[in-house]
Length: 212
Length: 212
DNA sequence: GTCTATACCCTGATAGAC
DNA sequence: GTCTATCAGGGTATAGAC
Image (cartoon, rainbow over all chains, first blue to last red; front, side):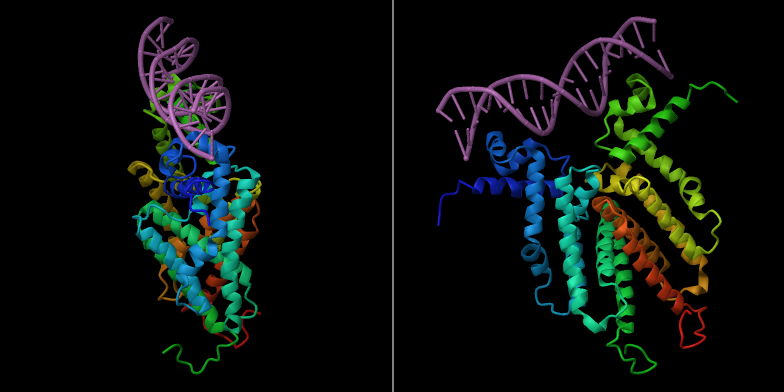
């Protein structure tokens, strides 16, 4: 419709610039001046759209939350139907992000979550919404796996476990600037899930010889 | 020997104050003025002992690293000999720390690790040394478990997995201000270890009925 | 070694012309 | 809505008397 590049598009440039900078440098280390330069706007424009820096952060968290399907899950799950493999494809996506940045940048939500020790309630709500959506997606995969997993298994708890593995693994990878520990953690998670699948109600032990 | 309260004791007061403040408020959010007030010293004293703020952080990381046995492991392992239970006692210690602070404060090393996106090499070395010592301690427990665990199990990888579970769990507990997700993650880790113990070379399956 | 005073910079945020 | 210029405050770090 509107071909004009201005209007609401300026606000979007600010939010996208903030998303990138918060991811790379962190929230506290990103100054308003950094934001303005990256977005190519001046301070009058920013403060026209946002009351302050924290409101830019809220917009970024909303952007992540709103884009979790298209930006995160869809790319990771392209061509993958098996629900269990989708979980590890998601984890592989974070691995790629680590490798592509020399293990410097990890999960933006987790970074901000630990960076702000006493975030204001709306910020915490935004962080929680992102974590919850992520956990929901993984839980959905586990539910889709149906009887392949033991009935007694708490799907919600395991989904939460997947998230802690990712976040903890990313933390170590970034600290050591090496994916090795991320891989170790994901490998252990894989082993745990393999064991659960063997115990699944759909698993009829065909022989005493297990898996090929 | 020396009964005088001054001398090197001032330096120690600064480091201890910094340890507390960095834990509570984070590194970046703690100002030099905060440090001086808490330590009860003035800026001249601080800059007499340390070139700058970052060097105080290095001293704090050294303090954590040097005290991991007496301050962290010994209290958590008091009266607990079983190596596997020691791992969960360690995790229970972090749970207590969370509960005692309304789930506001978690692992100080992990917080700083994610707070500083591009830490200077000596800081990263200090963080790595702490993570490595922690992982070593857990790995030692796993090695002590000997044949109770499967021979094929990678002790180092599992120790790393324990650390990621703790760090990720603490992150979620702090974000949600609720230990529930920490408990879920640790519970899943417990289940994984239970399965491994059942597969251990020392486990002779006595019956088809498993665990009472 | 410890104190007081302060330099100097960068921060988030604002004022007001256009 | 966008620009320029700038404010007030807090940040780290320093200078120099004692």
